[in-house]
Amino acid sequence: MASRSVNKVILIGHLGRDAETAYTASQVAVTKFSVATSRRWKDQATGDWKEETDWTRVVLWRGEAVAPYLLKGKQIYVEGRLQTRSYDDKDGKKVYATEVVADEVILLGGRGDSAPSGGGGEEFSQEPMKSAPRSRQAPAAAAAAPMSGGVDEDDVPF
Image (cartoon, one colour):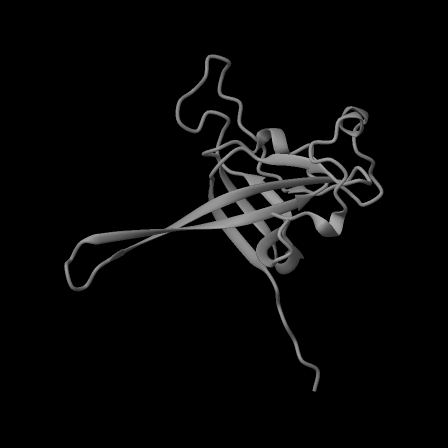
């Protein structure tokens, strides 16, 4: 009998900071950001409401077109897979990192989530923002000034 497995993560939460995009040595864009998800429950012993927030690191490959819209506080939907990998830090110690590798990122809500800006009430489409096909090249301006130096795709420590 064949065994089955599923590795799928779906998050709806808020961005903890603006997304950062770096480029590998081969000029492939790597956008990373953190998503906060919270849950609330009523403590049975005290009757008080409790809240817990979890932070999840997310990696989006070839998402340089999406990154400018991924701003701190924005609510987003992320769909992808869980990945754990290891690398050696500058002291030679093995470090393990677990993150979500995003396949889809959808901005939820409008441009002015908290207050309308003077420019009108434009809203983002809720169409999925998928990473670009692997054959796509990085923009020329990005190729001229990589953000993280020459980092190989497999060696990006988060």
